[in-house]
Length: 71
Image 1 (cartoon, rainbow, N blue to C red):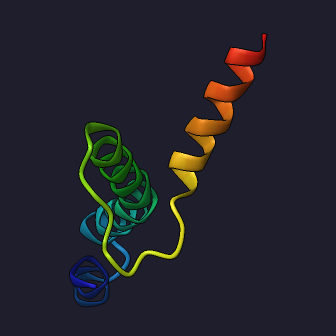
Image 2: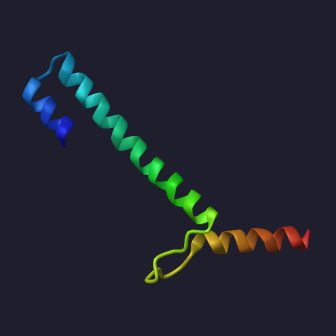
């Protein structure tokens, strides 16, 4: 929102365009970074929240381990 405010305040000039480009970059990279952090925490053994309904990554790892054991 701050970057969008900078764009609105500065208008369509070099600063405004840079703010828009940075805004798009942040919007695209934030979910990827959050996913990498969550996956790394899960792999390292950080427990899930008590109210979690399922652990899909754990189930995936168990299925993969069973498939490798069957081969």
